[in-house]
Amino acid sequence: MSIQDIIEGKKQWRAHVARVKALPPDYRIVYKEMQKYLFKVGPVDLSDGPLLPGIVDFFEEGAAGGKGVLELIGPDVAAFCDDLVKDSRTYADIYQESLGGEPGTAGR
Image (cartoon, one colour):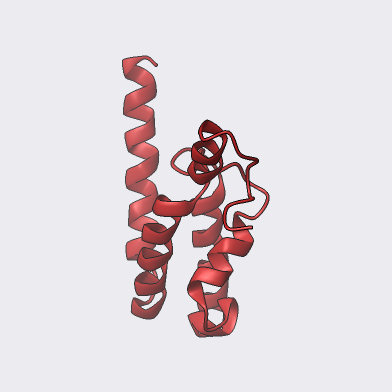
């Protein structure tokens, strides 16, 4: 990774954060909770993938349409996040594989 890649990544992240800050307060609160949850259990490519910007796009559209954030995602934020990443490779999958198990079989 070159210095130019790092600089470009920082620019993109700052632009992303500015979009989040422009959301209505209830959307910002839910986004931050989703972000915390996804950084714990989410996909391996979360920080440079399309998921977080896609959530902001979705929230911007909902806010522009006058909908409340929970009207868009439902009352269970974690379940909404789990559904978003259900087909993505996660750090939990990698950990499970390192233990010799199949990904997605924990607790079965």
